[in-house]
Image 1 (cartoon, rainbow, N blue to C red):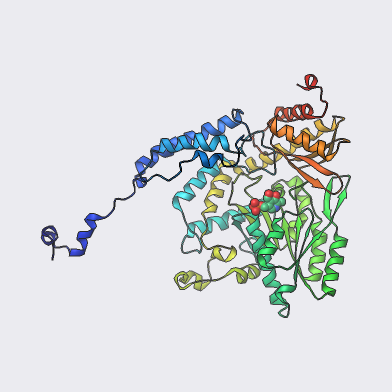
Image 2: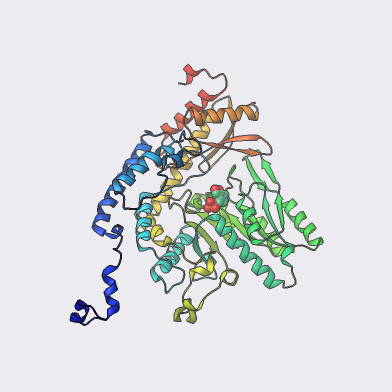
Length: 506
Ligand SMILES: Cc1ncc(COP(=O)(O)O)c(C=O)c1O
């Protein structure tokens, strides 16, 4: 029976239930959002300024479990004031973080985050485009293709890696996921060319300097045979390049044993001491034995933006796929690992799968690129907008300046360290300086590094090489570093040496 009201306006009875609908969450009040967003931006700017002024230590002093103990035991049933949430961030998050954006953060490699990237990401998140095929978000798809074509040209990569060529470039969530895509595509190509090959017989090759993402990707892809090829130390440069004689001999032995070599990954700037392989020579071996050649340039590949480094980067022209992280030394924050590839016809068959709900005339007519076919997942964030905002806001010259500033400062730091008789500089390249305390044991070197971290507040990590054991490394990360910052590092290091004359180096 219709209620009086429903009868009066002539609505069906079912509409009556709408009067008892739960309210729309208050979070969707956009004027309130404006106020909260302003408060949040204020918080971000204040936080960044505190870091730049070194008002916070780079490393936290918390113990495992402290953060969880400081958080409410249960979530709130009702909306909490935004100011109170920000207060939680100030109280619980800020003091318990390793501050990657701190000027004394010199560990691993940079994780640069330009202000314009933050704003681009904010807008991209606000639009929240799943972007898996062209029709579900034309702007997200085409902006990413366009930006990647810009970058291809700016990095002087081969035209085959342009979307108008045989290949293309997209942003993967991480280099590791790009590495998985490379290996899945390599496997597909190998099996298409040699249908008799058994999956269990595939072999992948990488160097003892390679990032473990090569190994991880091989495991994900189900590769049973992984060959870690030794690298050779070059005392004149401190480089550790893959021993290509051993690579060739290992491939031949594997073939003789009935196995199927399919993938090799070369380095342009591996994580330890920034090892660089002879990728052009590797390409000859790869071509002879029909291996997919990948180049891991996650940190250092971005120097391709600088004409003075292009001579070192011939490998970019011969590899089948190339990984460069926009998230490291390129200001774009996470979720922006550039993956360039030479041939779509090996990528798409490896990753294409679809459902009836994705059918549309553009895909059917094959006049669009559906980016789901070039990655592992389906949905993907609007990465192109973040990249577009950052590239336009900084200008390519801004990126070049940032790289050259670090290169110049790293050279200055290395020269200052070389002038100390107790320090041996083993390698300085791009924005990385690797060194040891001369004549000291590994334990002494580790103790010096721990003191730099714990007492002097410089966050750095070590690596281990075959020829030198423990090697200390300073990676320049913060975009606003100065000569004075390099001088501080030297003074702090000297204070940490065993038997340092503290008064003399204070
Ligand atoms: C040389 C190199 N390759 C690959 C990776 C893996 O990067 P991602 O965290 O994007 O997977 C790293 C990370 O530090 C790296 O330094």
